[in-house]
Length: 103
Image 1 (cartoon, rainbow, N blue to C red):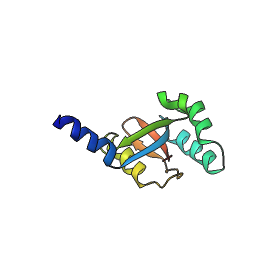
Image 2: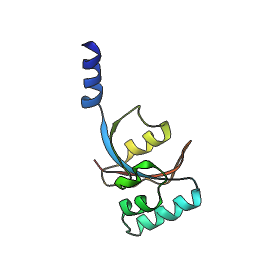
Image 3: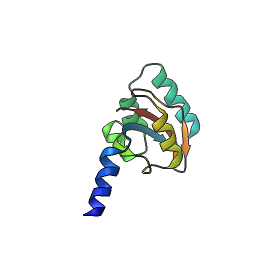
Image 4: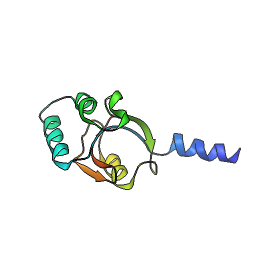
């Protein structure tokens, strides 16, 4: 019972955000995609067409997550964003991410 209580508190009462991302292996590609987003192209469409992550089928939507779930660099950038804001290119062990905070 105690474990459920801890899980409940962690999941429902801590900081939770919802983000989408685009993941590519090449920094130049990431920079190009970020420019297209800043020029007004659809984040979700670019994610569907370019991301190497499985979330591409959902326009890059990763759903809700709390602190301590994502790799450190990704988490730091994601939690610093305001709703609707798009990050600069973020490098992690998986490649280069562009993150958009949804909620």
